[in-house]
Image 1 (tube, rainbow, N blue to C red):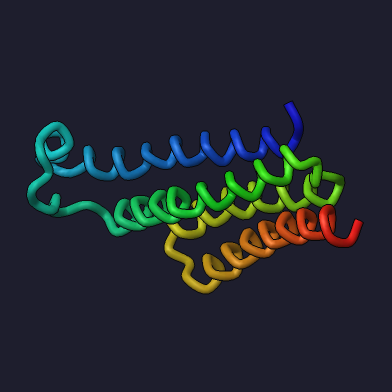
Image 2: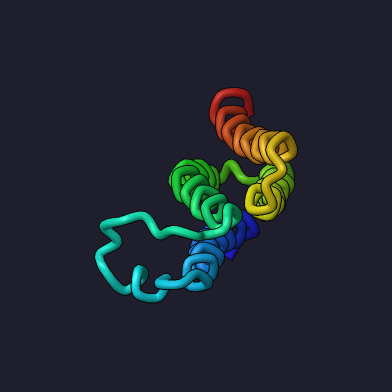
Length: 136
């Protein structure tokens, strides 16, 4: 398996692992276990703010994973991957790991900067695809 595909699999695994912090936050409050196993028709009270941020961090990665997958898979299957996409992939994965920690910790400006770095890494992939077909 190529490095690009490992990056994509790692992003998927990170997405799955991000279901755990909110679960821990919710089970740590009275009634949390009951809330988890029922229909969740009401908002669970008493969850720590970091638990709510963990939910949003997970949602953000879920929302972006399809974009990451589409771009990485197009680069992979068209042969547009190279040393530059490998670096971009590592930067993307590292930025998403840091973003998760920073988001859950509640550090707003750093969170935005780290997110932007990940998005720029994704644009590098797109540029490599464009270059592969139209320049190279």
